[in-house]
Image (cartoon, rainbow, N blue to C red; front, side, top):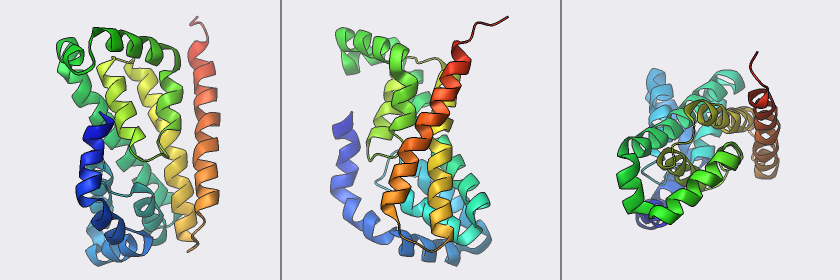
Length: 201
């Protein structure tokens, strides 16, 4: 699955990286005027199929719309991308999942995502390639939808708001952004997992 995701990077990766670095993405969004928010969501959803650099787009949203609205738009786009990956792969069903992964690996995947799926989804949002693969695997292994959505939000929301905040200030601080986008999902999913483990009254 990772190889399938890598193919567009090998073909178009350089062009997308040059076109949609923070300055390029900001210029592109500003030229689109009132439709910039929709185009940005389209780019972030398209990251599932194309090598769109998501974090510069999120930073550009912060510059164009400010940290709160820009963060909200970025989070929505990243969240929709994850949901699309999960939904498409879950729709394939067990028979297709067995053909893709094999029975043994599918069984291992189900065990892994039952135990640590939330952590995997929340913590891979900041990494390249891994978010798409993790969401696809969550769909193929039929990770419970509620847990998936909460874990996905735990990863997408902090990352989008962190990069939008940095973008709104006009600073290029990848170290700070990377650190926050790794640390905050740990806190968010850790708190959510604790609530989900509580027995229902």
